[in-house]
Image (cartoon, rainbow, N blue to C red; front, side):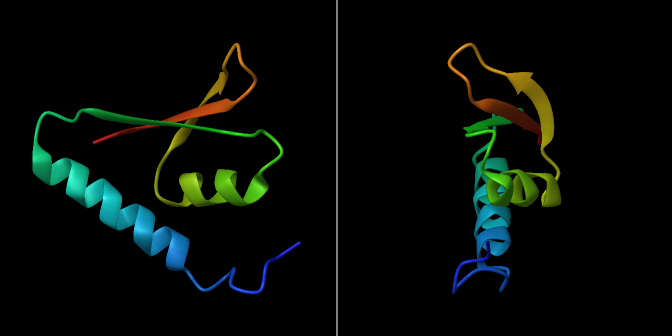
Length: 68
């Protein structure tokens, strides 16, 4: 189900800005995120900016990482 504000690319642009900011700080080699496995919107967002799934954490979240 798409939300009223979804699908406009704001989340992706925001995530790209965060990634660029972390790159500019130096010393950041990897970015890791965790999200509910049922949250397909989060999964699609992270994959769209280059994150790769790394499996399920012991606490149940899907973990994804991006090499910067």
